Image (cartoon, rainbow, N blue to C red):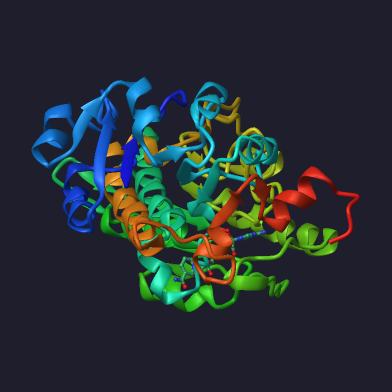
Length: 382
Ligand code: NAD
């Protein structure tokens, strides 16, 4: 079986699906790897490094022609989707729920679409394949560094002959994978860290990393299915907001990571909260996208400075800003999934398999994912 690696085409995307270090395991399993010319450039990996690791470097046309399975980070562009052919498989973070129409097109073309964002995350043997976690981890780390860079003061307490610098007060909103990494990173830089989440179990996790958990008088338990949060009711939201605004006002740096699967991210930092912050404070909104973000004033992909001199940074693709580390984790995830699916020289897409089942979004001309089918045809009965 021939495995192709694409050169990503999404704007600003610098990651690559496979790094040379990941090749040995694949070739040992009898797979041949071909790499589109320049695929690793964004992640500072020259074509020669892939060749040394045993891959063939080919043109884009040849990669699509020869590969049985195409590996990528982001979903294919329209042009790339057209290049995929019947019987070919594509594996990546395809975001099927955000772009169900693309899944329809791939199914129509007889392409097997396998998405890493559909990995069952609580299944322990799927943990090595959990690209959402590995990339959120990179994001949480990089968010703290970017916020530190934009903050005009020190994070740690510093006592010097020229005076004493007070430590920065950093608040992390949302204590999932990214939030936990952000807590650890901010602590290592010497900040005083507080954190908040609507899932009470996160208190212990935050405290074990040295953050103080923010306890609101309004006790909310919004633990949802699969370890995720559920959306808050309007009453819960209002009560939470009023109290959070007070906490946010006293912070130097606020990093927000809150997400609710399949929904717009919740607004946790309102205009009023920003107005209460001191000049020089920084907000970094990790949830910002075209759908909106955790901060009411975020502009996805931009850095804005408000009238009261608060900097709001809303990066759209943090993992791509650390492409070497992010690609290396991602390559582990995608190779683990590929090897897991491999059976008798072909991909096993058995719907009954606890990993192959959920990750296979389209196969044999059909859309397998019920969630995608529902999005395409909301009226249809299940
Ligand atoms: P996520 O990106 O969906 O959300 C980030 C955080 O935002 C979550 O902790 C969520 O509770 C929080 N949040 C949502 N609404 C909020 C609000 N209104 N106010 C404050 N916080 C809010 O989460 P994630 O990082 O993908 O992780 C989701 C869950 O999956 C976690 O429980 C995590 O431990 C679990 N997980 C488990 C495994 C595993 O078992 N192997 C692997 C990865 C993740």
